[in-house]
Length: 273
Image (cartoon, rainbow, N blue to C red; front, side):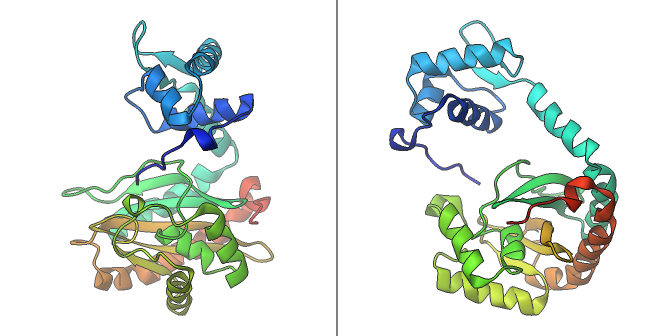
């Protein structure tokens, strides 16, 4: 999924916002990015960007590939996330479940947590052994309007709440979704109605051209959806008929995770918006 362009008009203003914007940008640039390009992308003065990068480097979160070279994240930031998820028990609880579903489906299976008004991928298992392996970045803020995971969460909400979340995030630009994505609220609500009747979401070339996906919400009483489990793969392999076949094991995995989630404080205290 392509990243939205950030203009100077929407450039982060406060120091904390600027630091977070730099970290988020670097998370999409594993091969590194030059200071000038980073400053232009974020709409920041180069002097301010350089000063913040120096502070981040001093604290061990950023390094330069060589003197005067591109900047990259160190492993300190992802290590923090892994420590947090590991301490909360998510990996121990979810990984065996998504591993089994990946083996059954032969495709990429991911777990995304509902975090306030966002949906964030935190765990995955790759079931594909040969051919095209669909494997997008983890930790992204999922675009709700065009993703199977987003639809699986939205279908558990009222139309008013679902509309609010999508309106806040936006439908994005054409380059950020596939040809099958709904681009109006009317089309989206029709899709969500179909998902509710089916019990899980299905998308065909909605998130990206040539790709399909399906997802089921992980539901807890009095909390609603706390997470979603998704299966994604190429259209040639993960056809609509194949997704229908995988509907039952997908929903069963979501139910199993819901029952097991009581042992994780992060799931128990999850704020679902």
